Length: 369
Image (cartoon, rainbow, N blue to C red; front, side):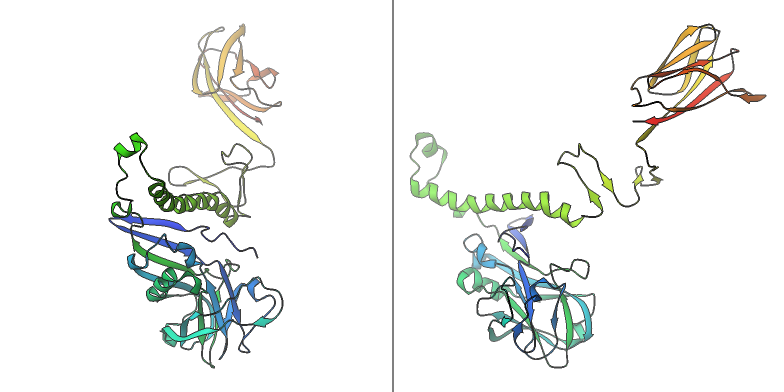
């Protein structure tokens, strides 16, 4: 699968007082077998299987791409979050830093990367529960990656011999939830980090030095890059996430919309949308003749009524139908109901023959939009 852009979908949120929370989705995930080998297609699996000594789930978040944008000293906490999509045999799990290069995209069976001997965290067997999340503090490791970007090879989840656990991957959205990394930090660019001496007077006089401009560019360019990546994410990733359920045609939704599920309407979704094989619209009206040449409209909209002869009235549609509609009419009072005579029906209007004043004429039209 294609590796996303390093800052792809990084969501800057929770801007509260002087803090940022950066949520980084996993960029690569695969696993190695107990033989410490990575299989040819392991990087395309819906899960990462760890089932014995030597097996490891490998996760990479490209934290190194944030070096210089997030200062290690500003990081207040960092948490690894991943999902147990299946637990056949629970056991203690350990989190370690990966210490050599690897990629999920490599072809063929290959050696697993080396792991640090230091255990960052241990998840006890009692906390390894199917369909639950593991939340692991990795603050110290993230600070080290930000200070030394070249050491960022990701994290590994390892286990003991009597363990059989599956961890969800980014390819297995129907199986579970892919991992992510949360980093909480102070503001990246506060007033104290702006180059000294850049003020309105120097900007007006053109006296800002290239060094000062370069500093500002170094602060602002990564932020703009993140905004650009977020725009790409919300334009592409979200429609992809609902593929098969909602299809859109263009960002302005001017084209057809296909919804493969029930549609509910109303302020509380209390109404169900009508459906059919044709593209139809409806119109209804209630008319009361007051004389042989005059009539009142009591209900309905989207039409006007004119007298076209004795006891004949033309209902003109404000917006014509695209083809000939179907009409049902009635003509009634308290003693009975009869059909009103339709002498002409077109896509633009209908002529009704209405008899006695004081009776009520009603019609319903259904036709192609």
